[in-house]
Amino acid sequence: MSPAERAQWIERDDEVPLTMQCELASIPRSSVYRRMEAAARQQCLDEEDVELRALIDEEYTNRPFYGSRRMVVFLRRRGLTINRKRVQRLMREMGLAGMAPGPATSKPHPEHKVYPYLLRGVAVTRPNQVWSTDLTYIRLARGFAYLVAVIDWYSRKVLSWRISNSMDASFCVDCLEDALRNHGKPEVFNSDQGSQFTSTAFTDVLKREGVAISMDGRGRALDNIFVERLWRNVKYEDVYLKGYANMAELTVGLAQYFAFYNAARPHQALGYETPDRVYKSGIGGGAIIVDKFGDSGDEPENEGTTGQRRAAVELEMDAA
Image 1 (tube, rainbow, N blue to C red):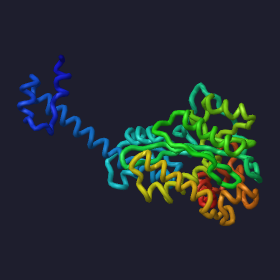
Image 2: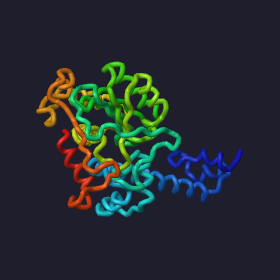
Image 3: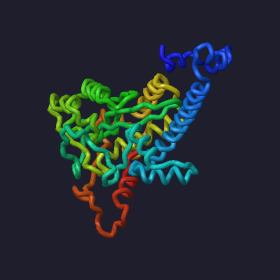
Image 4: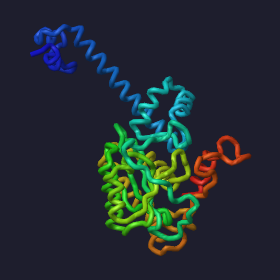
């Protein structure tokens, strides 16, 4: 048996002193101390990462156009010593990327087909005309999860949702299938260009149902603003308040929140009606994404240097 395998016998909290354990296992004490110090440092880093993820998550929820550079500035202003490489790693693990135009925007899988955006300037006037989906990061007391939901644009009703501890496409497909099974099918289905939604497993379901596929333009912060607003509501009205410890608690909590969101929470944009009532009646809803900047994402004259980002925030505040 190798020294490395024998080293696994050594336990800091054992009743037998470390010196005696090392002697019995024929292991140098110095190597055991180095291993324990490395484990302690890693645990400290893991705990710091949990705290950093929480800060990044909350700031990104407020400002989804923040990329890693601005997130570093935000964290340093909070008194933290951190470099961009670490922030990039954490944001990548969380599935976050700045929504503003530029090289930092999220990229689709290179082998997946990307479909054009079909909804710019289109008035949404009835339920099941347009559905939309997106993924978001949900922080837990120890660790994190991913939430996907399908929403009806006209009524803001959450038609289906799922959580997972990974960002694979399977739970997104399951969420889509559930929405189609229980609510019919839309005329147009919109998503971002993430690999989960450009995968053939996901798009083949939409093709099977004869649904037109639409995908957000690169760097278009307004294209899926209704789902972005949903994430803000979920986090500030539920997740941040309750601080779920694990996936089981999160599942129960989100089930209760989405039942409240659909059936009891009044929405300003719906004339203070609920999504359920508007979805069933087909009265009082609606949506439109105004093509303010054109396909290139260029800003109009005299709008300042942050026109797209400012407009995104303004529309988001009106979409509740």
